[in-house]
Length: 451
Image (cartoon, rainbow, N blue to C red; front, side, top):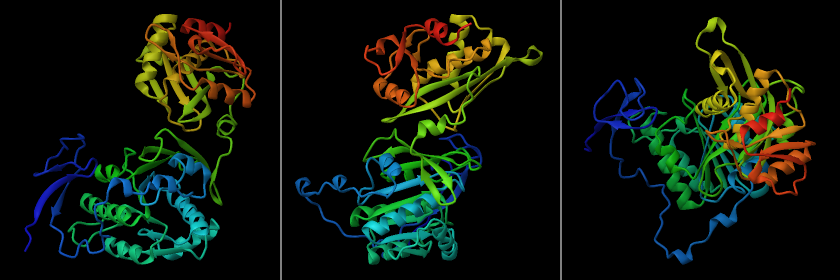
């Protein structure tokens, strides 16, 4: 009889320890180590795996050229042009944000164009799945469904049916009989993912996994879950709003800097045709502290609104600094530059910064927009609503060049903006709108914040 081995595995990061500890030595989280029994798999554990043999590299077909569409253009762009046969993908996000809804739409679209699609649900009954499919108009003959959580059984069904696409909702509900731990545990998630990976690569069938997230917003389960898959998509947005963003954080077949923007409706997730106009639709005009920044997300320019609010700190205490959608450390540097180079008394004021629409931005081109928004708020002077701002700010107050200027200015021109404040090194002389080239933060503030 095979000998059992007991290890303690962190539920947050997947790190293993031979003994229990109150604090994970890798991620530092408390009370996350749980006991797992490791037992060698039986003789028939991998009977379903498609057998393969070594081949010369010259005889291997380039499957990246044979992508197929998901039926949703926005999602295809995030994936790099569509799904690749034999790929294993992971879709994560908060509960109720729309993962199952989007993937059921994808399943229906692929089934109607390419043939049989298998949707595996381990969390819902088939009756519940049918109700959602009727609401989304996703019912078709080629879309077959099964309510099952046994990974070996699912793999056998896939081998028998040979569908074009398989969706497993969700990986945390799957279990392997040979692993003596409950579904959702680190061992079960790791083993189930490994078996789906072998099946996808051996048979050329595309498999998409739905993953849960932890309270910190990261995918639950061991890190091997993210390493094993070919791409990882994250759903972002608030559950109580209709705004949804699908972001690619890993993609072996395309860029990792693309996003898709959707709007949740009664008919499911609908792609937003004009994201910039959508993001600026509720922007107040002639309001101090509001600035528009043309932001590059991958190859797509988006116009986002940066909002700042500066108010005197009550009772002369320690001023508050709070950000939503931007890196707090980067924002602190911008405030320090404004205090040192412009003399703004921010040390006695509370400062709040927000990116309207729920986006999370990291590009350095946002620096000058944050600085102008704060200066506009503390001066109580509004920025021209038809003027945008962008540029990277250095520690001595210099404005550095950014990439993609041509696409940014073209997007501003398309939406009716008249001018833009940009780094002087980015000025070419043939821009579609009027530009103000600036080399220091002092020059930018003189143009943007008048009076």
